[in-house]
Image 1 (cartoon, rainbow, N blue to C red):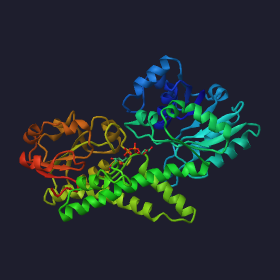
Image 2: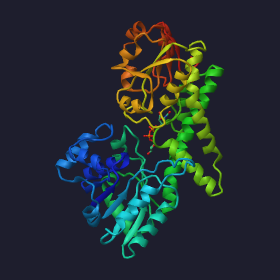
Image 3: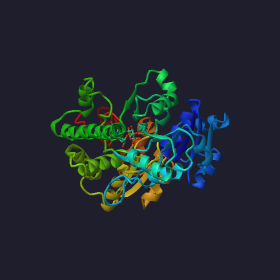
Length: 435
Ligand code: UDX
């Protein structure tokens, strides 16, 4: 199969590289000349384990190409994927679809023979109808089927998630399109991955519903964590205790400082707007949005109160800034709220993150970015674990204690054991663990 992938962001680049690795011929197209030039030099604009090698391999084997010019690739394509950004629109939180519609308009007159146009970007219900209308209006003779095929990959685990998904969702009623989509995902089909074919609007909603449900799960366990602290219970044991019930499932029950990233905050907000517009208010989703935003702000207060209520002139070392490990992504990261509130309260911040300090430098002012975890901790009044990178789990805790001015540790990701930390002589607090 021949694939044209419009947009070389996270989803576009990973999907493009993985489809090429499945054996298809993929051309990734982006307007940003710098980005395409860099990709053609073998430079990957995002931090994603394994992606560089996967891209290099498929470029070398001549199945993966990068260009700014959509003409040739779209004309030859069996499937054109639209994987451009759908950021939250400033002001109202609706998904901004201008890039999606622009892409539809641009490809319309290039369509040649039956072509499947696939929206992979996360888009509100009804977007596929609009994409179809735009293409039909721009080029009435185009023979197309517009399909919704949401992507569920996670940053940091993107390649594995793409190649070994729990399911593939294909939203279309066009049988020819179903055939093309099955062929594209053939290697998964052989692995017995369920391919769920639905109507297009249902498929569009599945993506939002999935992300919102996961956000609900996280927010729920975060509230239970707060309760655990009050009543003398342990949230990790509660998670395990409820997660072993197959109806609940153990994943996405790690309590922490609140969810961030490029998807959950944006998609919960967009789903809430879709509900309001449709006259079907989503009260649970609305409270999740509110509770999570409040939680991220509250995390700094947890640090301040642990340090006796006043952090004026104190130095606080943060380990981990990205919204989660194995990414350099700072979007909606809890660290942003934590740093600004601690600074407001008069604290000096030292920080280390293995990947995101470049990004963080654009967002945070007056933070001393350090060369490594031990450098960050040096002479600090407290260490705060914000993101659970594996390397922080393996720190030499005796060295940590000797470097800190005061042995205070606030562990917002529960990466250490309470008893062990207390035995080692730390003052230690974590999330939802009264013991
Ligand atoms: C998410 C979805 O998982 C993915 O299916 C979708 O395609 C895009 O959005 P991503 O944002 O990359 O992926 O990361 P994910 O691993 O889901 O984590 C999101 C946030 O939730 C992070 O801030 C993470 O720290 C937090 N989280 C996750 C928790 O606090 N607890 C958990 O148990 C799981």
